[in-house]
Amino acid sequence: MKPTSITAVAALLALAGACSQDEAPVDEAIFTPRLIGTADVPLSESDLVTLLADERIACVVDSYETRVRCVDTEGAVEGVFGREGEGPGEFGDSDNPGNLDLVRGEEGTVGVYDGALARFTVFEPSGAYVSEVRVPFLHPLRSFDTVLTGVLWRGWIPGSLMIRYDVNLASGEVVREEASPIGPWGVACGEGFWGIPDRAEGWVFEACEGHLIFVGNTGDATVLRAPTEFPDERDVARFEERMLVGQGSIGPAVAARVLQRSSDGTFRSFVDQRLEDYRAKPKSYSLGAEQQLVDAANRYWIATQRDTHEWSYLDVYENAEYIGSVRVKDRLMAFDLLGSTLVVLVERQVGPDDADGIPDRALDWYDVGEQPFSDSEPLS
Image 1 (tube, helix red, strand yellow):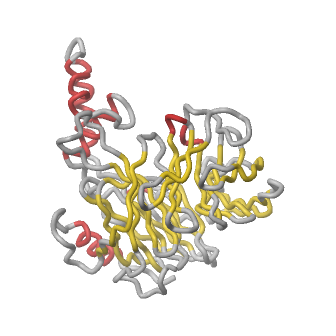
Image 2 (cartoon, one colour):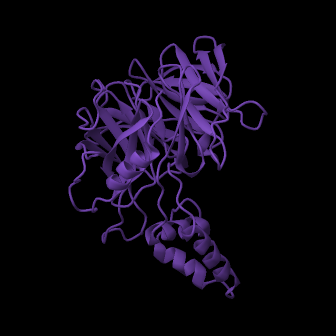
Image 3 (tube, rainbow, N blue to C red):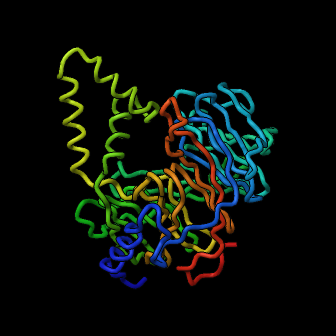
């Protein structure tokens, strides 16, 4: 891989973030795709979505009911299934929604990896039970056929970082186990802490302070640093709500009442100090380890924390170079991509008709088949 100019990458990303929230993008590095469908989904503590093989149906986790909901681009419900338990088609540990992962099946099915039960269950999108198998603990990647591929962070073990596992879904047997490269890659603030394999036997790692590390199949590495931004006052308000009640599940008015009812100013002083510390630190570059993928053309997509109010941005990299950003409406929580279709789980902006002050959740489908900044073959 050839070295990439970090200055050039920073300049492109700065231009991408400089567009007015209400104006059409003026730089070719920003692509605002066409919306092709939308569907409302319930509030949940799970930020996961999987787009099924027909590119029309997507599924999310309804954490409060310990179940999965699948809907289509017209908003119709295809299926709602699952409940807490240990029997066939049930899911364990409802108190920890992070134990459930959703994975796309190549035959139109949806797989649910249950970390609490160490079990992978396959369903039709209607909810019809297909099969299940015991599998080792891992973080599954986006799709499966007869084999489920996943990764496990091993950074607490000296000389280790990530392990890739391929699991035979007929037997639950691990048929491939491979350690990732571990560096060092010369990142001053620390080495990579999470990575995913690409489609050419390489890896992409996310490190601290917006660093991305692209490692080829021969071990050569390219390190990029994307620019980050400081929180604005809406970010601060969200942080305050999460700190007071958790998961941002209340509105500003309720959060204010919580503070007013404190018996003295000690709690208020503590909160104010935490808010000042938050304001002074740049936001992380990405939304989190799960919000990244490698597409069929081996391009790397990562959901960023740029804006995340009226607009959200997915940055796209090709051959270890930033090539552009895809801009979508509202606050992106999760995304998936297949063929020419992008689906995003979003929180809507709170409007005057939202008496509870709680952002509604929805799925939006977009057509991303003609990205103007990419010279590669189409996704589909």
